[in-house]
Length: 437
Image (cartoon, rainbow, N blue to C red; front, top):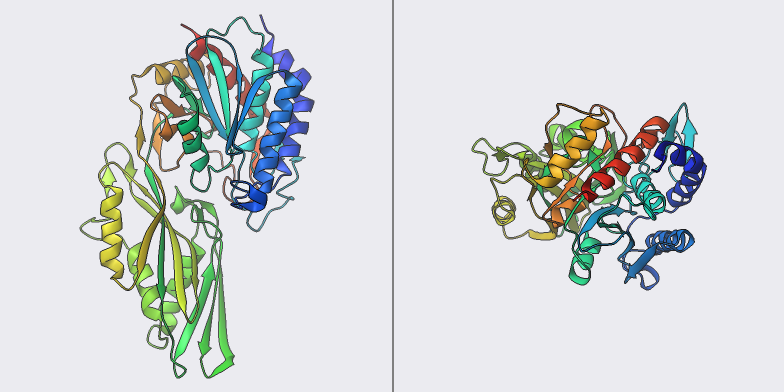
């Protein structure tokens, strides 16, 4: 029998060393860079995982630099564990260097430590620990993606090219188990126009990615006949994951309110800001802000916005429940913004739901109960999107614990050393339990 506690302690130095290498890679999407699908750093991260697979003697395959997979065990059935190596931009306000793994007061800090490089390294080493285990009755395949944060084209590519797991989980959410995920839309709204030389107008910019509540927004109000005569306004909000916008403060929406309050009747292109502001107000008849019995309430995040004297571009992140469709959402926006605006769906992720009495849920709850992590909590649903939504018999499982702030998609992303080790133990037992016949 493997002494997993002893193995983790003996290997922990190497686990953290490899994690620090992965954290140092700025794996933010840069499509097409040097002929790569999602950027040179993303490819470098895949190459690093392949290098470790070779070192550990584990079967692997690089699938066109979109994903790579590592596999151990034998059998017709396959447990799938998708993780991702890409990250959202680091943002401002960190107390440490986001691309340098640092340990402070019992916590590890770095962009990706939770979402999702930390769990990726956990899974890499669990394959090493379990490679020759007699406890496995199924194959175990860990799939490393590189485009989860900005469209999940990597996992769609995997599904088109490779074998589909029969059961599995992704360590990219929270405990106890996430059985349902809202649908997600990444929508771009744009408009071209022209300001006359005699008119006062506003330039506006803010945000980094649609799936982050923006922490920063700025604007300048110009007298067109005198560009030196301008007023600059700045708003600093609080960044967080777009699936839970209520946990942050959206700098774009707050600055819009400020501008409308003070300059509503003085600026030519102000009607654009009025439309965005109206969109953020919940409609009384709930034509957009629907509530579902299973998945809860629709959320909308204005993630990025740019407006000049010639064009307007805004990107939204919408998470929607089972009571509305993406087609209805698009129609609502088209009616709201009229034909002078262009409405485009850039990314669409489907609604996902696994029944509570399914095998994967029962087995993973058993793991938590046996480890006394949770013995009474029921599975949950969320607005966040994971790779699980692309597989029928898959859920999201950890690594975060309820009521513990990790800084995912915000500043100072962190995980305690104790929780890091505890997660490895949980995932070890999860793989063993799912492998049981």
